[in-house]
Amino acid sequence: MRNEYLFELGGENKELAIIEAMELLKTEMYKPEKNFEEGQIATIIVSRKLTSETVRRLGMTKRVSKIIRSSKEKNIEKYIGKLPIIDIGNNSFAIRRISNSKMSEREIAVRIGEKISKENRTDLANPDVKILFYTSSRTIVSILEQDFVTSYKNCLQHHVKHRPYFSPISIHPRIARSMINLSNCKAGDAILDPFCGTGGILIEAADVGMKIKGIDILEKMVENSNGNLKHFGFEGAIVKGDVKESKNLDFEAIVTDPPYGISSSSGGEKIDKLLQRSVDVLGRALKKGKRVVIAVSNPELVKTKKLTMLYQFEWYIHKSLTRHILVLEKN
Image 1 (cartoon, helix red, strand yellow):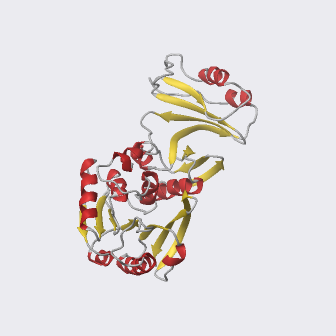
Image 2 (tube, rainbow, N blue to C red; image 1 turned 30 degrees about the horizontal axis):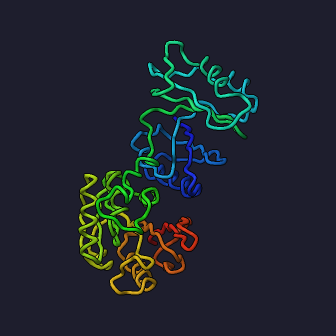
Image 3 (cartoon, rainbow, N blue to C red; image 1 turned 180 degrees about the vertical axis):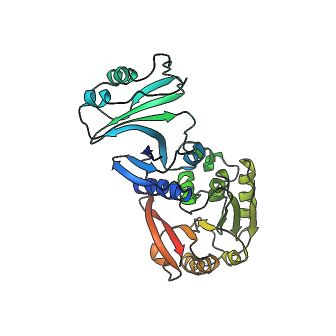
């Protein structure tokens, strides 16, 4: 049975948020089809019901709710009149408007509430489920269950300010999370970060149940990465070494944020040269059909015949720095 879900996207990078969701759903064999996109929402049709575990993996989506009815009907009274009876079991509920409309939230709540059994209790403070109402070029009513929680907020618990070992250029947890979800890997698969630094990417991979492997040229970074992982209750195989050690390890995908800028350590090697050499090494270390997800400042430096570019996204850091998130696949 096909199911349709409403994805409320974060505002940092809409394109990245949508592709992250689509790629994760493909990895988890949901056969996703994007049906509608407008502003900061998208609706996606899948082949079966989503699980809370899948939803929890998302880093760039704020909320995911199951659509009850979606229509181009602009007359809200007519639309609500055609809604089916909303069965929410024995759960308490609240009704929330998530877009502007001519009808007030209270009026909408009263009208939609008529579609819910009077035996269900309204709880505005802590409902078991929320009934969400959206209207613009389409009108949508969806159900948000309490256990359908993405990691848009929760992954911020892994932010550098909450880690015992700090690096000023550590990648943002939401970006690290989305990069993991673009790798086409499931829980239990092995992820390699050959420039692991203080472990930002490895933390997100471990949090979704992946086996984690890391390399760093500095012993201090190996210790810091292990320390941060331990702080959050994770563990992995982190070794001191050069990126060329990648060829000696077994993994399903590479997800990495190589050194850049004056705060990075490259072992004395020029950053551009290191990046070009690394892409060549990683291209050879990967198995056919497997992916490298990499953050770089200059995408031109990672061009190689060994890898095909699937996606490219921009991530604005500040006025003098924009990082590019590249998803590459081994030919």
